[in-house]
Length: 278
Ligand SMILES: NC(=O)C1=CN([C@@H]2O[C@H](COP(=O)(O)OP(=O)(O)OC[C@H]3O[C@@H](n4cnc5c(N)ncnc54)[C@H](OP(=O)(O)O)[C@@H]3O)[C@@H](O)[C@H]2O)C=CC1
Ligand SMILES: Cc1cn([C@H]2C[C@H](O)[C@@H](COP(=O)(O)OP(=O)(O)O[C@H]3O[C@@H](C)C(=O)[C@@H](O)[C@H]3O)O2)c(=O)[nH]c1=O
Image 1 (tube, rainbow, N blue to C red):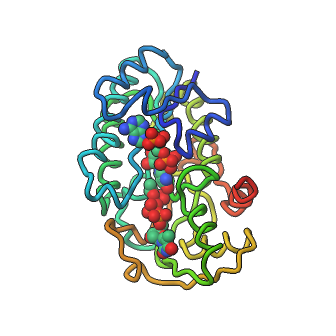
Image 2 (image 1 turned 30 degrees about the horizontal axis):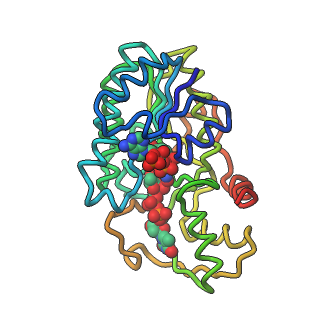
C-alpha cells in the first residue's frame, strides 16, 4: 500500500485517481503538528510513501517563512527519518525553484542549487533532510504543475482569457508546464522501483517537453480553449512579484530516463486533456 500525503493537492488528486492511497488530508496528518507524520506512518505501515503535500504559495512564503520551512523542511525531516528507520521508500516531490535560473543550459541533477526565494530555500532544506535521513528515497524535481484541479497557471489563464482581450505574460522565464497526472504516474512507477531496488535512490528531474515560456503556455491555452485573448510578451521586470522567479527553469531529465526508464511527456497533449476536463 502506498501512503500519500497532501490529499487535496493537484498531484495527490491524480495519485488517488490512479489508485494510490490512502491519501491523507491536513486534518489527518498536519505538517505543522510535530509527531503527526510519525504517528500516521505507524498507524498505516505502508509499503511506500509519496509526499505530495507542501507549502506552495510562492509569493506568500516571502512573508510567511517560518510556516513555509515548517511544512517544506521540518515536517519533511520527520517524515524522512521515520521512513528511513522503518526502511520504507519515500518519494518526495521538489521543484525547479531550487536553482537560481542563471544561463540557458538545462539543469542537471548534480548542478549546484541556489534558490532565489523563500519557497525554493524551504524546498531545498526539505531535499537535504530526505538525503540526510539515509533511507530509500527519490527526490523528484518537477516544474510548473498544471491540472484541472486546484490553483495553477492554466486555470488562471482560462479565467483571465475569457475576461480580457489581451494579457501581458512574462516571456523570459523558460521551463515547461508538467501535468499533475503525468507526475503522479511517474511517482507510482518510482515508488515501485524503489521497493524492488533501493539502490535506485537519488535525485531525479521530471519535466514535460518542449521547453516554453509562460507566455508560450498562455498562448497554447488560448488557442486550444478557443479564447480570443492575445498575449503580449513582457520581461519579468514588467511583472513585479514579492518572490523572484528563476529565468532558466529548464531541467535535464536524462538521468530519469537512463536510470529509471521513464520518458518525458509532451505538455501540449496533457493540456488538451486538462481543458477537456474543465
Ligand atoms: N504547484 C507547482 O507548480 C509545483 C509543485 N511542486 C511540488 O509538487 C508537490 C505537490 O504540489 P501541488 O500538487 O501543486 O500542491 P498543491 O498546492 O495543489 O497542494 C498542496 C497540498 O499540501 C497540503 N498542505 C499544505 N500545508 C499542509 C500542512 N500544514 N499539513 C498537511 N498538508 C498540507 C495542502 O493541503 P490543504 O488543501 O489543506 O492546504 C494540499 O493538499 C509539492 O511538493 C510542490 O512543492 C513542484 C514544482 C511545481
Ligand atoms: C497571472 C499572470 C502571471 N504571470 C507570470 C507570473 C509568474 O512569473 C508566472 C507564473 O505565475 P504563477 O504565480 O502561476 O506561478 P508560480 O506560483 O511561480 O509557479 C511556481 O509554483 C511553485 C509551487 C513551483 O514549484 C514552480 O515550479 C512554479 O510552478 O506567470 C504573468 O506574466 N501574467 C499574468 O497575468
